[in-house]
Length: 466
Image 1 (cartoon, rainbow, N blue to C red):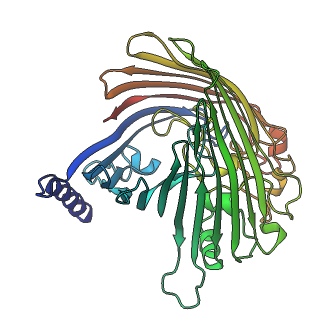
Image 2: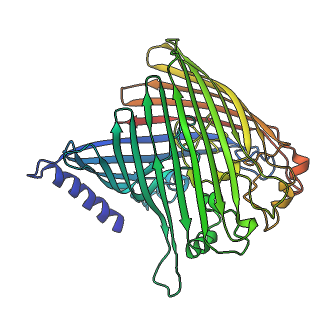
C-alpha cells in the first residue's frame, strides 16, 4: 500500500507541476531494459558453482526514469527514479515480480537542484546526485562513480579552464545513540578540467575522513563493496580512517583520426595500525583509430597494483569506493549491454593487468552494428594471498573467479550486436566466453573441492532509451 501511495503521489506531483501557472517545463528521459539471460559458471567453478553444468536462465527488468523540472535555462530540479535496483529486484518471479503478489518498489536515484548564480556562469548542484571522478577509459572512474548526497560547484576561469569543487556525505550512522561520535564519512574533491585544441585532461584530488563510529558501522556490512574497497577487514580496530586520492584523465585527438585516452590514479588510506593502511595505483590506456566509416578499432591496456605476501602491513591495492561503470570488455569486468550479463567489476578484482583489442561499432547494414572484443588478463596479487584469504588478517577480499593472482589468467571473447528497431528502441544480443586459467591447485588451499570451469553467456533483450 505504501508503494502505491508513493507512486500516486509521484504521478500527481509530475502532472501537477506540468499544469502549474508558474510555467515550469517538465521533460522526461529514461532507459528501460528487459534482458533474457542464459549464463553458465559465472563463478568459474565446475562443481557447486553457478549453473553447475546445467546453466541458469533468468529474465531481468529495470526501469530508470528522470524528470527535469525546468524553470529557465539557469534553474531546474531533477528527480530520477528506478524500479529494479538490484539483481534480486530485477528478476522476473523474484520479490518485485511475484505472480499475483508482486511488489514493485520505486527507489529514488537522484533528487537535486541545479542552478547558476545570477549574472555569472557558476553552476551548482545540491542534493542526491551522481558524482564521477574524471575518467577517459573504461566508461567511468575506478575510484568513485555513484549517487550520493552532496554539493558540486563548477566555476569557469577561462574558456579552456574551469574549477570543480565538491563535498559529499557518503554515510552518517548517528542514530541518536549516546557516545557514537564521528559517525560520518565525508569527502571533498577538487577537479581542474582543461580543454585545449586536440587535448583534454582533468587532474583531481579527493580527501575523505571516516570517523571511528562510521568505521565501526561500515565494517559490520562486509558484503558492502565500498567497505572492502576503502577499509578491507578492520582487524578489530575501529579507529578513524583518512583517505587520499589523486590522478588525472587524458584525451588526445590532435593526431586525428588517432585518438589516445589514458588515466592515472593513486589512492591511500591510513589508520592507527599498519595493518589498517592500504595504498595502490592504476593506469589504463586506449588508442582508437576513427578513420574508418564502418568500425572503430581500439587497442587497450590496464594495470592495477596487487597485494604482496605480507598481510600485516596493510594492502597494496588501490582503495576504491564504487566503480559502478568501469569495465574492459563486457564480461569479466562488467560492461554488458543490458543488466546482469556480466560478472561485474568489484573491489576484489583489483590487482591485475589486461590487454585487448576491440572492433567497435562494426556496421555494414543500416541499423545493425556489432562490437567484437578479445582480452587477456593476468593477476598482480601474490599467490600466497590465497592461503591468507582464509584468515581474518587478510588485507582484502580474495575470491576465486574474481581475484587474479600472479599464477592466474583469463582469456575473454565477446561479440555484441545491436539492431535499432526504432530511433529509441534497440534489440540486443551479447555472446561472451571466458577461458578459465586459474591455478586450481593453488586455490584448493582455500577450497579443497574447487574445480575450475569456463564461463559462457547468451544475453538478449530490448533497450528503450528516450
